[in-house]
Image (cartoon, rainbow, N blue to C red; front, top):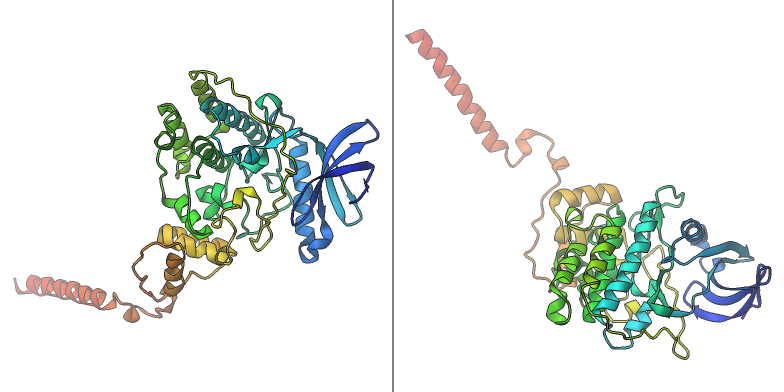
Length: 410
């Protein structure tokens, strides 16, 4: 283990992943304990510029935010081949670890935690920052049930110079919004959908969208309407069913337009419920360490607890823009597929590849007929509709001639 990062004295390791390590460290200038998130830039030389850009983007995005429900960023730097961000050291547990304890939290505590996250997201959205990866492992719960959002590493800012490559898989499949799955432009409502998935999982103990592989999960996200949470957990009030349904609406216009409204509804509903008095265990278990998830340019990732199920790892079938387009062909209109094809600059998928994608997500689907591209018709006579068009034109000409002859005869 390294002993120094810039001016920081490394005290221990908090967690590690494929691309970096999180350390507990001390800032000797002000005698403050901090958490330092690192990324070894030497691990991916061909993608070094992109990774480094996204890493500093996290610091820039989160560093602009000053809110009780968002982790505070103190500093950013580079030491040799290691870039690092010094941030607030939180003594608590990831929400994912708390959920993995095996017992559902009382509904009023669930609503309180999610409302806090919604408040933090609302503040970020007001500053033109979309998190893009809202999930339990990116939420820390500290004493008294206080929640903080971490890891704005793949956030997109309106003013960002780091552009997301089209077709890159960003975010965790189980928590992706429909527009993320389709590769469309996203806004704050995508974070709201992801938070809705998290809320559903906290209330019921299961994800609203499940499948045997990532393609199946994404198909469910685009098409399935989950059962109301109260069906799986009778202690969930009816009003919460409506809140969840609105947060998980497929159409953007039907979803909450801002996270502040979601937070207000959650708190209003929470205030009608009795207090359980149960304390959330925020003391980390022995050996419990934070995992870092990094999603590469090809869509592969270091899977943490959020993706521990067999269906959750990104499969090779969904590692490119072409795969995105094939999935779109299964679920979207022809016009949407054409638009996505132009955006991705990829030829529209063949009937065979679409049918293969249908088998991958395990849905019955009739074979897609092969239709030649319109560009192959070099003249009207070659078009399938040319015969009908010529016949109609002949009839019109004959009627006109018949009218003229009738005039002369009369």
